[in-house]
Length: 141
Image (tube, rainbow, N blue to C red; front, top):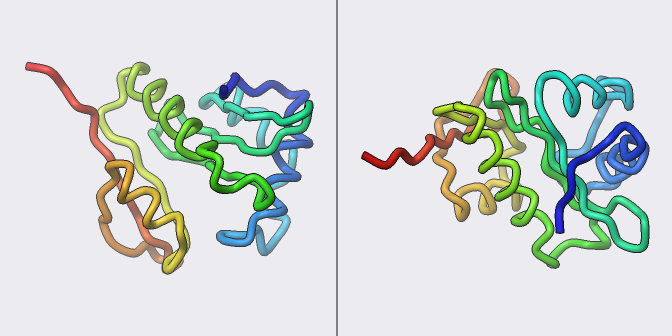
């Protein structure tokens, strides 16, 4: 269901990012041009489309292990898109040789429950008051 993101998907990805109810962008700190290196140089992105329109996306950084984005348009929540994107992204990041992934999200959000239910561990709060999570690669002996 998820497919790799391309530059042509960036306007749709940003539209989803601006539509979310939790962890909304409060400034123009993230603009469309910021997606290019995130999906082409420092990591990779994936999208899910419905009727040719991006309705969910994820981006992970293969250098730092940071989950840069995982968002589902509010009109398309509850369809399993977040979990599908999460699983593809996490698998790919660990396949790149990373041992640890990390992310930050707003406190008191549904995202916290999502990450805890999918194997992430709460570390604490960062300087911005966001909840920090990490996840380690499972290694077979």
